View 1 (cartoon, rainbow, N blue to C red):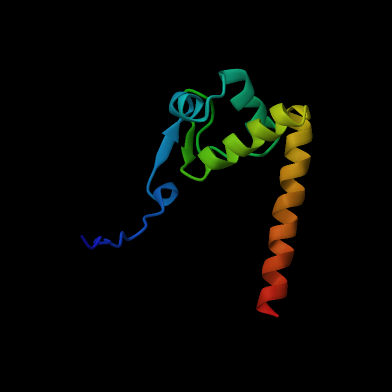
View 2: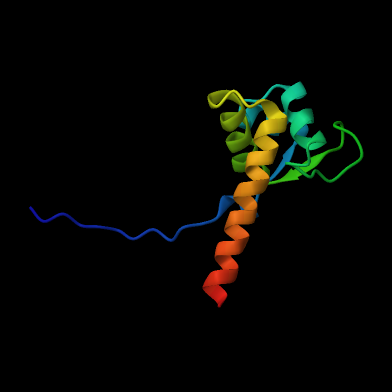
Length: 101
């Protein structure tokens, strides 16, 4: 029997989702202290004045997960993960510049 394939149109969820502080903690697996550190280090930029009214874009979830993974797996801590992620962002920016010529 022939197999039928269906094509699925991808949707970038991060562009359509916003997280509260508590929801981002749950989704990323971070505790509140870790998430505050990510904000303090500048890795995440919430809208709002305090954790009670912070709102994060959907892009915060993969960024938080990556930072927490770096901090944990490499034993860097949040500060070290922030440095690594800044360097990764810079590399990506430079690659984009090279592609544009």
